Image (tube, rainbow, N blue to C red; front, side, top):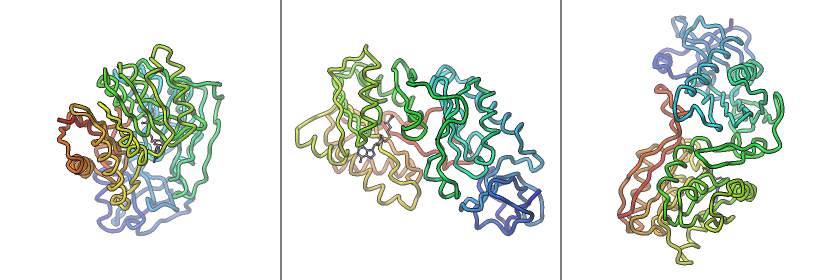
Length: 395
Ligand code: SAH
């Protein structure tokens, strides 16, 4: 078995159960190592600490599979880990009956580099590390066994694969895709484009927040910015919104969004308007048109993938929140999100507070939001907490 020996003191984060070993922490390796191979991690005194996957091309040089240094990493390991992740969700009353569900959430489920989402009878796998890539066969077998789902599709086309020296891979791994795949999310039917949509097809992390938007929307004029395929818009309509204007710059996303509306004949289609536009420009244009809203949702893409991008991202968040506050009627609510790992909740709250001041409005936070419980955050891996949201009510 190959070994990875840490520099003095570099075992500290591992002892706190953080699963990443950075390049700068590695003193040396011993034995023949190919990408994704399992190594035993030792401190400088050769005390064994963990078993990890070797990622020679990444700054995160190894990712821990097990903090038991004698653990065997084999097919049975993945069977156990994936079955455990699936059964944790099956025990949660808000997750148990979901047709769209994240089954494995990487590090927080003890499986670095492994994302597995389920949409009805289809399971979508995204493998983003050399270790996860090496074990794809075991991972697919394990998820088929744990779910009884015979259709597995791979969407390993995330940019982070390049950092691992891995090529993008997409396509069926087992079974096939149905002609149309739809899920029910709290009473709303949504088509999921597993092959061509963003991420694995849908933003499951916002499920509970979309439901909350539905409960707040009754009688309100709603503006949904960065609407993707209309998840928030459909819940707002189902919740009795007076009108819903939805904006996204992606034409294919809006095609699916209109289709989603047709999948829900019970909703009042007259109240829905879709616009293909850049949100930064659209918000200014709406002010020019004299439009006002009682509820505004801002769910932008990741402006700051890492702390290095935080300053530019902060300006972008400030801008859209400022423009949104200016369009918000007294008593109205702003539901605003950041999914940037590089922007913490305290900074995000300061940005939103600054936006309110500059817009000349007073507002209070009435809800603090995060990703749904099928996207857990390992206590030892706080950087896994990427999604944060504030619901602010204007005075
Ligand atoms: N709220 C959605 C997810 C939003 S993801 C849901 O619940 O499903 C972010 C969306 O922002 C993507 O659909 C992307 O196409 C869109 N987007 C990115 N930059 C944009 C811009 N400058 N203007 C408008 N839309 C943008």
